Length: 418
Image (cartoon, rainbow, N blue to C red; front, side, top):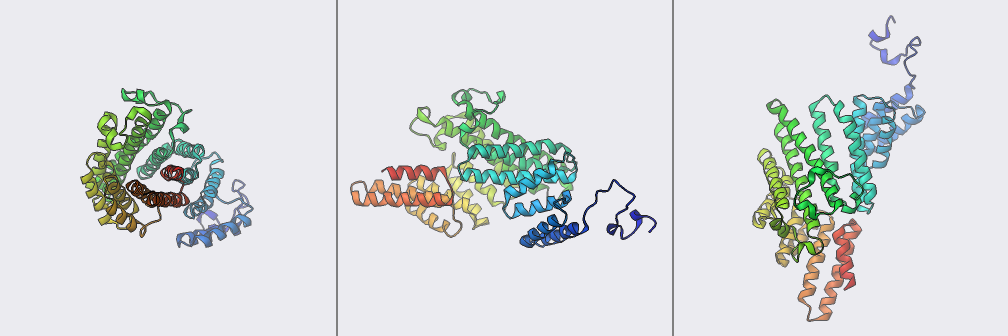
């Protein structure tokens, strides 16, 4: 062999004269390639076993690309802690390459999934830490993405991390830095931690708008252009609606909101909330114009319209169900809307249909609310009223077994106290 670089079998040789090449055990790399084949075939259990054998054969010195593929498999299997740990090991090397950029993206996805688990377990401080770590990873490496398509994915994930902060209680943000740009007349009525939370979520709005611009830059040169813009617009609508919900909940707390504290009532009283809702509706409408068959965008539009036009909101939910009958969110929203307007029988029918679609806590929360209303109607008959309240407590308990939903916890405490 005259030159390894020009030989067709160069992959099987290691030049002993080139001391810059780090020796890699061939058996470890072979196991790694086998694991990659299993991963492409969707056989994740076999891929995991092959990666483990590769790690043993190479004494734990796997190449970054193999470790990245292993982390992706663990992410797909729901092993988020293990995936994030492997990504940390790769990124700790300090070098930057396309592989490291992909690793940062995978770790941020794992951290977002871990944050969702933290919320279900009531670990709100840990959830914020995971969100912030994922944001820092993407912010530190996003400038190195040369492809606008890759950067689009990064900014979308960045927006998801910021938007998920709506699920956290405002007191978690009491020590966060506050952006002066959020000051306005109505912000003076909001506590410091609520302003911090809204400022945090608003950064997701900026990320989604950037994703929109990146998709629009491609224009007609990319056949997926309408779907990319529609996806970013739908997510932008969700972020704006999240800001409106946080503001509405804060303004409706205590005596500041009066006796009517629903988002429907608060939107009529607050110009800030109405502005956020209007912009949210516009974003969802843009997404639907570009992709009329996006069921999640129709569901989001219905959620935003519920605060200003319940009848039109019902139409949007029904359209979402026409597109995807197995989507749980529109059914939940329709059932809760009927309950709010006193249509108990219709709401019960919708919740019965929801049981055939998904095991969601909202199904049991809605059932508990209906049983509480029935208990009030039977107020003159203590036996029937008490029986309904006991069933309501059981419904809230069932919801808590699925997920630690705050509404289910509050309902269970109130039903149990009675």
